[in-house]
Length: 145
Ligand SMILES: [Ca+2]
Ligand SMILES: [Ca+2]
Image 1 (spheres, helix red, strand yellow):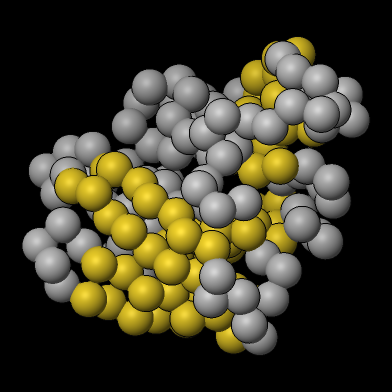
Image 2 (image 1 turned 180 degrees about the vertical axis):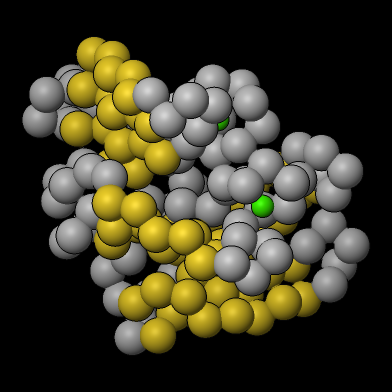
């Protein structure tokens, strides 16, 4: 199991806790800030949880990154599904809002080169930066990884 936490911004702000059980069809157990329990299935064994607010409406979206293909699968809070290919096997997903527009950006860190690869949601521009070495661990990596 991997325990992750996230604090969303906006009108539905609050701490959200989720537990991903690493099995074939991954159930996601969520306890939202109002104490409501939510269970959903999203992803499969080997996927990495990359929760965030990808559409920027203030609610955290259930999301996984598949290392073998670099695919991102986002289940937005309105039910829409968005997919994207970004990153490659060996990368570490580091999705956050790097450009400050309120939407989570697709981002990976490549330990072999120390490169950060970010797609900025504000303009879809790609930003790269060198920071870190192969033995480092990105600080914003979800708890439990
Ligand atoms: Ca959202
Ligand atoms: Ca952003």
